[in-house]
Image (cartoon, rainbow, N blue to C red; front, top):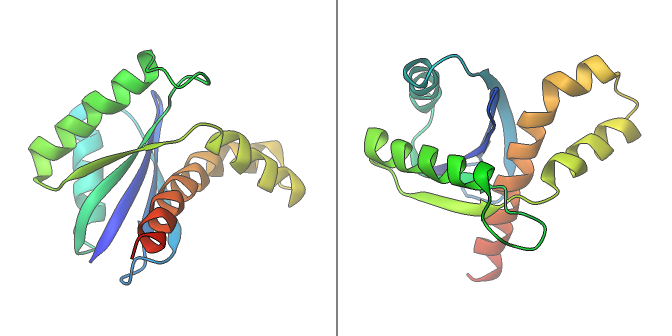
Length: 139
């Protein structure tokens, strides 16, 4: 059973998936947001490829740890996922994951255009990997 990691933004949703044993996260795709209905249909297509046990949704807290408008949007989207698909939703602190994703791509000498297309998928991978690392440390 796998987890799906999501980096939910206003324009895109980065998607990552864990390996079947739950040790590593791999980026899958970036969904361009058009409408809630289409967003959920795109995610449904991805879910058909994997047997999952839950979602790990990035929670973009403010740097002081408080919940701001973007975190509220992520939490609302997580509730919709739970209601629509019936899987548990875990919220994971995603502070600095986008910056880390940019840093890795800059070090790899990716062009600005290529970074723009990959950043959300890589951020979703960081979110999911953080959660998987926490799980494995408590086993």
